[in-house]
Length: 146
Length: 322
Image 1 (cartoon, each protein chain N blue to C red):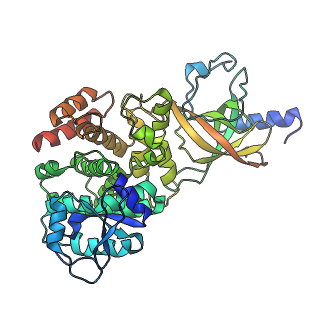
Image 2 (cartoon, rainbow over the protein chains, first blue to last red; image 1 turned 180 degrees about the vertical axis):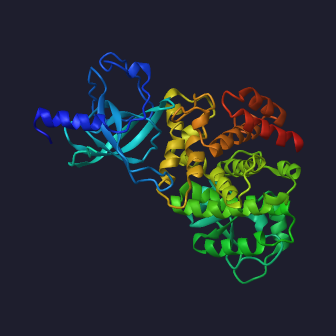
Image 3 (tube, one colour; image 1 turned 90 degrees about the horizontal axis):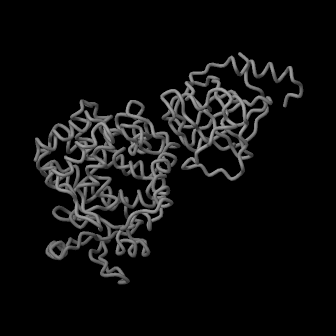
């Protein structure tokens, strides 16, 4: 966990420098999250209340973990955006479809990394999918800044 | 599974198709006959003795389509099926197709209803290979084939029909690799695997589903995908047939809502024939559509629910062979 603002800024800069192929739908651009009425999502079975952060979308690092043999994934870091977060999981916006059961690592702005398992995925546009995932275990290393 | 079949399972018995025992030497297993509901199974054929062919014929005449073998002897029965029944090239291809369907019904159904993903893949893989053997190279005349497709809707007949239709359509669309065709046939068998996790009262409900029930039903592509995705010997196309066969061309399908260009070709093939079979088979609450009405429906939904090119190809196949 990072404990000073400058480190957080460095991390945010690093995350913002990650490859991002997202094309955000209009409702997700600008300071949106406080105003957007989030629709209920079929398949979402979140046990804990989620926290929406009013303001610009929060970036995070994203990297696939090998989990489904038939689905080839590059072990590359991407920048994704958080829609919401709870104790048990999160929703993100990603540029491609993530399949249920797929594992990925998420690097948060506080420097923590969490391993997640995708539960569902919904299409928003050809370069934007909303993905719901559950945390499966904790890891502590910060995302690579390269 | 029927009530009788479920009852027999209580005795450790495994259903087999009566027809597979006609002609040739019997399998080296004990074969049981089960009466009505609640009746105990009785021994019909003792291991090592000649099969009573006239008695078998009488059973068939009386509509007894299922006999039983002990679960402990199912491997011997399967060996017999492959060696004596399916590998017999003296049988006309269409007859082999029908036997394959009947013979596989209990084996595949049992695996699909209660087996682990690994055993499901094994038995569906064997079925798919043999299906490709009898259909590929036009060993079976399609017109004849359409004439013998099952129209009674059960988990197996639907899976088997979709598998057969997927194979025919994929080949017509230009897929020529035998390995891919086997994969597609197997994917067709597996496409509804996730339904085994949907409560039976929802699957068998005769009236309209409530919103909650509909949401449960809509989970089946995801549940099937999750069950199979951990297996090493399942390929991406098969997974997509399971996961994406309810996606629509216009992006209004489920579970993801992806539009046409994002959906795997095999899943688009599966979507068309899945709908066709669902429309043309009899259900407890309605008679199946005649082919012409089903064709009209598919045509109407081309470019909305379904890939229009695939629909055109399927309709052309149906018209050529009607």
